[in-house]
Length: 380
Image (cartoon, rainbow, N blue to C red; front, side, top):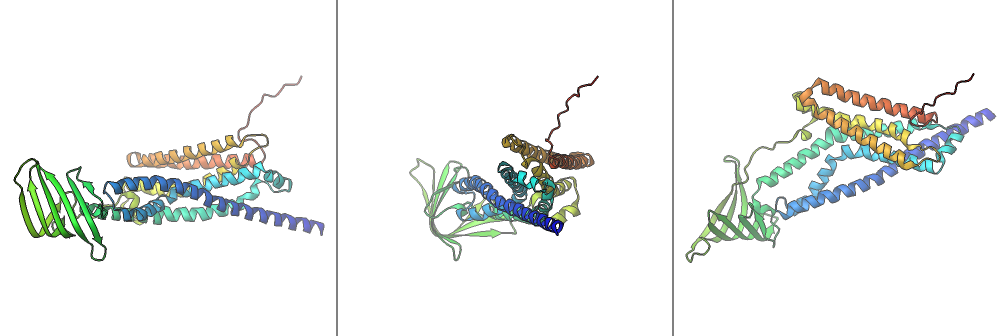
């Protein structure tokens, strides 16, 4: 009866420990994700606002582009997020002596493998979904939006009531109001300079027209007047018109060309060129990196008594940046070296996986990360 009670108590403690680890890692992951997203969003918003001020993109497209950019980088952010979350949780448990109490209760570091495997499976499914399906879809959406913005005339970036400079200072646009129902501009002012002559156009309304046959984009102005002349001359030409068409020389209607990051995974497999192989290797490497980093976190997260946790955290981050940079370098060499670069990539994954398993084994047996060989004293 006593033996059965001890076994039951041990199983209950083990279940509580596993649930606690999975719960705290997930909660910490959400907190780390929020911090990383805030930094990423601030940086990207500043870039989008600069482009909106220059008239490259309209203001109302900033949020959709920002959302799609975040989705496109999720497969890179998630492994780092879970790695840092595991380090923080285990470091706190070690600092508060919870790991010591766990070891005294007969629960070693190896008992954390089951919840870690659960976290790895969940994380691998999410990262794989973003890397193979959702991320390329977001890249294609961003490319389609940017192509649509580039194929429009320069006046599309104008906010009502604000002057916008375009064509490297050779054109200025102003719109009083934009009718979102029919897509027409009202109260249009346009100034342009070409070969020393300046032209000013005032129109009551305007709309954009795309000609796919000629591959050109036009801005059609209605019921206005145009003034032409050179600065300093007393003679200007005045033209009243019912309809006046401006051709945008900087844009044309061309098919959308997506980068390799936006290609579907099936399309990459069908092409199977050198650059396609690089992209496939990079997408699957982002999934393989996650379990290796989680095992590293188990080894680095447990800190020995009277030792600084900052050294362990610094070592863990150094391993992360070294691992990810080597994987990136190996993938970048695939188009030029082919099979040799693929072999080097496999060697990097296998080497770091072996190092992670070795460090975890030493921690599970309550040994330091690096063994120091001491010379034995000889006895007579």
